[in-house]
Image (cartoon, rainbow, N blue to C red; front, side, top):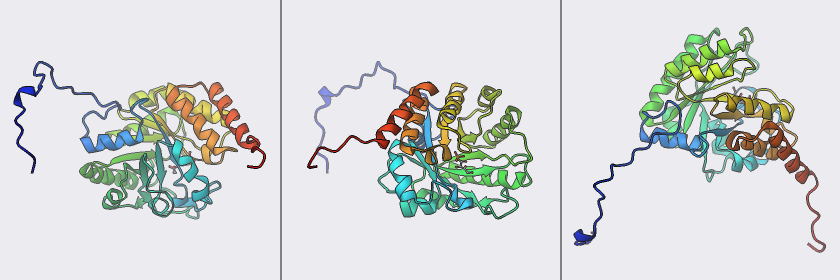
Length: 304
Ligand code: 5RP
């Protein structure tokens, strides 16, 4: 039992100073509850307001993707440079050390595999109870606006939003673009805005060359960009740079990191662009320097 406090005279209430009340740093997120904000602060770095999410959930529909054959050997060593890991619960439980201190975004939709003729025919593939048990910061769900299963995938998202809001877990809506649709700013504005209006905490979309600033401006919650298919390192850094310059709150990048000729160098170069505002030229020079160091490590001293 605590002892009685007799030190009344020495207490300092500073009654003349109004209580501090900081606005939350993330776009459109100030009215969220404390638990949700705390989880978002494990995804987005409050110092830069941005995130480098490392995405390696591709196996949920395409099995052992190139670069993801051995997540223990190839992805776990990258985790120290990732603000957030985006993966499936199967990989999280089996392979990711629970000592990882950043945010975890769990893949929460699935169903069809690459053998299916309709990848958009997804269902919810994770309960919110399981997300809580795994200490996820957010769940991720594909939304196919304009696709054959538009209604079903929007419904998947809204059900996860409702469940996530009950538990303080964020929902990342991933705007998936079917082959029949044009990936331009007009489509991205439509898809991201619908996801935000229907409750997504933040949205992932693809960068588009023309008018990406209008996509981020029209979306009331943070946007992160998907890396997309593998590009030469300098081009991938350019895409990341252009996206954050035009209002993206970071990247959710997979293949452009883990299929790079030096994934450790690449994730550090991506961080330089996203968090430090480095130009793609500087970040690429950093990539080359780090990659060269790996290729020719300093000779070990004799007798070592
Ligand atoms: C799968 C996903 C992936 O996580 C996402 O596409 C990121 O990976 P990449 O940078 O390789 O595109 O959401 O649908």
